[in-house]
Amino acid sequence: MGVDPYLAAAAALCLLLHLLLRGFLRRSTSRLPLPPGPRGFPIIGALPLVGAKAHANLARLAKRYGPIMFLRLGSHGCVVASNADAARAFLKTLDAQFANRPDPLSAREVTYQRQDLVMADYNPTWKLLRKVCSLHMLGGKAFAGWAAVRRDEFGRMIRSMHGLATAGEPVVLPDVLVCALANILGMVLVSRRVFDTHGEESNKFKNIVLDMLTGGAQFNIGDFFPSIAWMDLQGIQAKMRSVHVRFDAMLTKLLQEHEASKKERQGRPDFIDKLMENRVTEDGQTITDVHIKALISDLFTAGTDTSTIIVEWAMAEMLRNPGILKRAQAEADAVVGRDRLLEESDLPKLTYLHAVCKEALRLHPSTPLSLPHFSYEECEVDGYRIPGNSRLLVNIWAIGRDPKVWADPLVFDPDRFVAGGEGAKYDPQGNDFEFIPFGAGRRICSGKLAGMVFVQYMLGALVHSFNWRLPDGEEEVDMEEKHGLTIPKAAPLKVFLTPRLSAAAYI
Ligand code: HEM
Image (cartoon, rainbow, N blue to C red; front, side, top):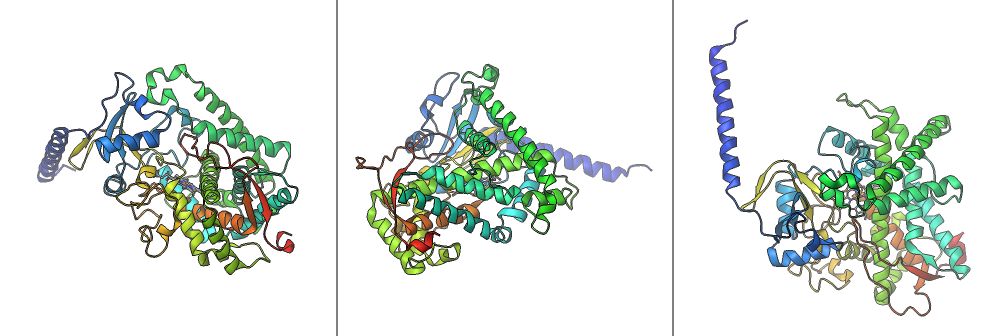
């Protein structure tokens, strides 16, 4: 059959127009200037200006160069958004274009060559994993299905803290929180409490997850200078490789045991059972063993540290401001009484607690620079040219401290989120760019619903169940941040507790 000459001519014309238009658009953006930013140094660029305290240093630079800044970090171009309008421009207007992630060498192995959800590019694998997570675990309906696991594990946490309180021993808050959260995730993912059963196996698991959390948060020179990455100057890549090998072996064993114990869970499938049963999706994609391992690894790392950090900071702030603690306790007493533990179903009535949690998310967001985004294509933002292959950092920390939005931004004041306060109209779910602790756009945190409930439930149960005091001799709470991808307190919060409920409530 011959080709219709008119059709061929029309197709050729379309192609020509397309090429001309593309060339024109490219030329028109290439004439635009780059956003302002520090020139930096030869080869290393602005890396020394950014340093370890990156969120704070970038916020300082933004005061000089503006809310959209461009920096060269080693051999990478990086654009930084530091206020609500800039965040909106990238995460709303150019959301799809910047929905990719960079490919840092140090993360390749632990993410199974980016076949995971957190570090995957915006591609069919990412869509698939995001969808199954929402359907079987993190979406509203699925999340409601594991309320009993949360109740059981947070109850255990309070009882174990009660044991320490009555023995007069201190509690290292982030340790107990991470344990409870990891066990909840273990139960939901593979029907196993993975952290504090004191067995050798559990300790191994705990150490590996903690190594992943600390290793993943480190600054790796090789990620900024791919040509010398092979030297692995700080040994971070080797460390992450070793963590990966240990974690992978453990996951392989965990999944084998999970398969062998399938019959015991009949009628009560966990997340992994559901993925195994639905490996081939409607559009013909397949969920592989590697996807499953990568997802488990993602969920343990993204789902434990983040909520823990918020609760730890909220508690630290309340120890400095006893009036806020007392008000949250009085609210909990009025709603719950003193004869039982606080439950998840109480949360909608605890409006002041909700305001305290939002204030902690504003002032101490767990991932101050969110996770890095990436665009392969060149584009235009606000009259500036953003070159192709640029990273995007959104300074959530600076946005939460913008004095144009927040009155006395450095003061911890939950009342700003109570009716009449300047924050009352802002919701953290990604629509209000003045307050985006979970990010925004297509890459917004998949666990934002879970994160919000974890934070409110843990903090509510803690303030309701105990009175809090610092160890003798410590007058002030140390508010120093530890720097990395996440910002926990530099000195983990260590406290002494006194029970405040009737004895029966702790049984
Ligand atoms: C208060 C707690 C939490 C905070 C503040 C938080 C914050 C964030 C932020 C800022 C991002 C990056 C968004 C972006 O790239 O623009 C993110 C991503 C993510 N978070 Fe969370 N998170 C929390 C809890 C959780 C929980 C409980 C889970 C799961 C159990 C979770 C799973 C994830 C995943 C899978 C991603 C990657 C999403 C993607 O790349 O598409 N997070 N989170």
